[in-house]
Image (cartoon, rainbow, N blue to C red; front, side, top):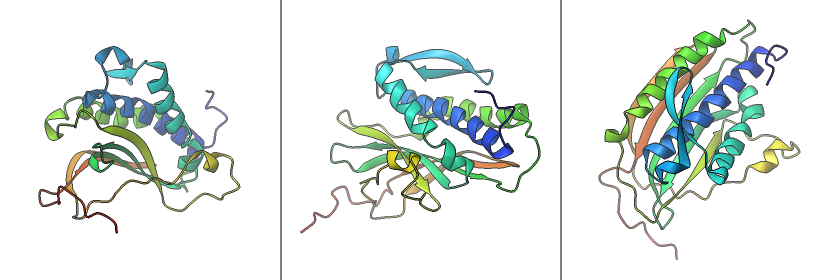
Length: 207
């Protein structure tokens, strides 16, 4: 995509979306959810990463992350979360990318500086496995986005996103920071959310 004619917010959003596509792929690889052959070693931002190459997997990650482009550009997206579930669709673990884009930033961005800051997240992700928990073999996962405010119903892009039915934990989650950056015009945090050790194993049933 040609970024020369984009606004600063458009350029920033495109860099973030491209990064998220690779980062989500790395997270899914890290969790061992699919056979290694579903991924391929690639170099991105001068870091060796695991990129999804299985058509359905790569297509889902690409469509989910690229679909966020107009909303990140407008500053509507607060968090992008990769959620892993058990067979009862209760979250087991969440990788949270919390972001904020300076909407008043009017200068030309230095993409090299922004990418240098983001590549540190990929380096940290590659060694984050000891921080994570073992997933159940019969679980599932999805990409969810949390918005600061909902986009208008009439927007074409908004119709691609549906409300999540993610069950909530009863106790505040255990949070493990992985990486953060504050590099105007972007602030980003990556952290793990896991159920508290006191979280009931069997959530109360609905009447």
